[in-house]
Image (cartoon, rainbow, N blue to C red; front, side, top):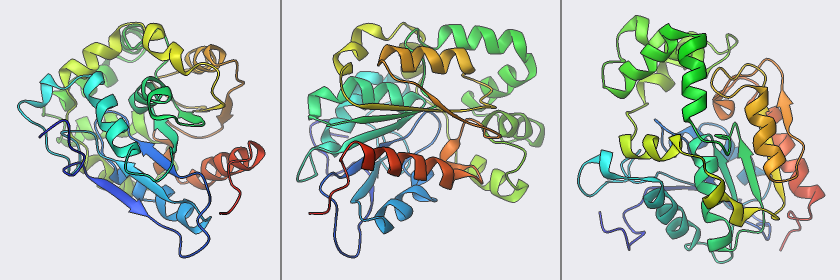
Length: 274
């Protein structure tokens, strides 16, 4: 893939039928997924609210190809993809990122002129290493299941079950959970290694932008302390959704999250119709 061209990036777009609002939205996914995770509910719903809503598949994810091995792609490459996708709007979009995508968003926001950010279940500023150590200590079987998925051996039923409990709440139906899990993929090892380091140096350029931080009560990966750290970095107060797990955009109660984002956009004055 030519990293200087956005034409090969998969960008899923849902446009309003009329009355597009003046600030478009760009959604950036986390590890192991692609733009499809946003198109299940979020993109159509925000288009119905009058927003030009798009989601990018980072290189090597979804329908976006990658030049060379996926494991050579790092966070800088994902930021470059996000900047390319943002550049295809007529005006700078608000960036909405989930988990790893929240780190990418914070690195990219100032560089693409984003007027605001929404961080969902974000990797905390101290990076992933502490979270992985905590997870390995607290739930070794789950940690091993995630490693199996990264090694490409996570399609067995027990492995899928453990990953399912990490990503989704018990309220998600088993058919939906399996459908989502079977669309997941391995992540770049370099990107995961990049995430292990403290992120303050790269993310601090986004401090000062209006920022909404959202988390899930039953997030097995990033507990309350990690969410509070992410919010405190931006001088914000996090909002936590009860009875919800890490993959917030795919949860049965996804609409509560979408409405919270929509309400915040209105409060910030980002929803005036053009």
